[in-house]
Image 1 (spheres, rainbow, N blue to C red):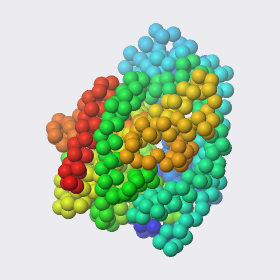
Image 2: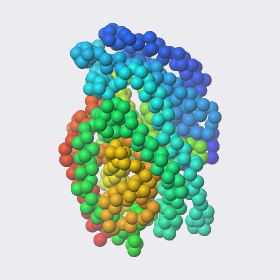
Image 3: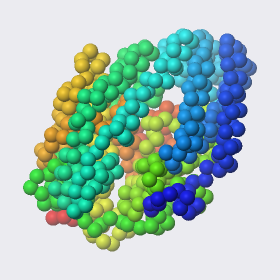
Image 4: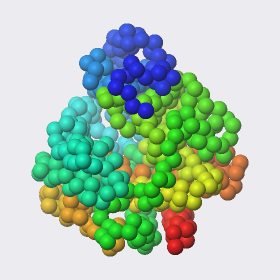
Length: 594
């Protein structure tokens, strides 16, 4: 569903940002008001130790944060529908600038609160009138040693305005300055780019896949020293920030603010290392089923089974998603229906629209979803995935006060992936075509391979790269390529050829500029598979526990929240459950393809 211009798209396929602000003029008016309103909070400086004053400050801060959320939500989503439009660019830039000023103006808050005695903070935490803020204050109490003086906090807030530029510069390089060549496909010239590359890796002709792979990586290899310098700078910034806040390592800092015990990270890596054998077995099966003499890294994304893709119109895809999510109950499906029918979703692709898909919550309004729907199986699953994010946001906002609505990124991929697994299980139980069933089994295996194993490999690479910098060793292109290739060989095994270009893959991963983020995809899918299997086996009790989890927002630490849904990542159990799920699916596919 692609259109040349946004004006050509039927209204029912566009999200309605009018639910946030009726018009851009209303946004501008609110922006002008906010440019002065946030300054009211500065008047509380030096007074936060007084009970009534602190409570008043926190409530006013919530009111202002809510308005900021609406301003930002409107600006960024409107911008994403047409990233080349000057007016949209201007609004997006303006709100970012105001948020920086807001951050700098409130730099006094954490230092001032952290200067209060532990006893005083505990008084506030125990006070029923502070119930909306008990988590916030408890976390502040735990992190007092990582909060700096007011002057230092203000300095770091200012540094933050440009220290994040490593990510932005990478995006500009990756999205514009790196030039990809054309290749010939089926007698026609095709311009390589990120989207075209992903599609060409699924081309049935191995020669086309090879040409796309080598040509695509050639562009990164030509810029490898620049990319290495950018990533090294980003890692050094992570390490500097951690040291400045009195952490022993960048990983410790990242996990501390996510409230995740390092044991979870260690469990993930250890359990993946224990589970290489079934992955290697699947790679060997893929080689056999594809009938290739040599299986290459660029052969891992082509569908093994041809003419098995589920192609359908958007409305039909929505119906499939609803059927897949039926085990979650009528109240869940009623909200899903509202999202489909009341323009919470931006469906269609245009040349100047942001690529990909996401869900974005706007407190006091409702979640929104951005899609670029095409008639593929992947895009059907994308609807289910983004709907999971939106429903997590919906349940959290409905159940929690504003101060506790926001859930940690650690659990952000759980609901989305749970939806995908439920949809997949539904399709596997209903499809009649044996070829489609084999395709779906391989789809599930590839989902686990790319989201669990591959992201764990990324996580291990991040761990290595930060440890190198923290031990004073250089992070050169050669070092990173060597470390990455070693990991690639360990994870994927001997049945695949580890083409020379793959050692440069680290240089094109944007998530590496958000340190210690990718492991959450792996723990997310592990948690989601466990929850989905519980729902399908246990029914109502598991559904009820899952909805409690969805409703928790940020009211508990994320590892404890998952325990409410029956998943304990501090133990081996969930990792072993998913490893068994992978092996059982693999065995079923092996049996069907004898």
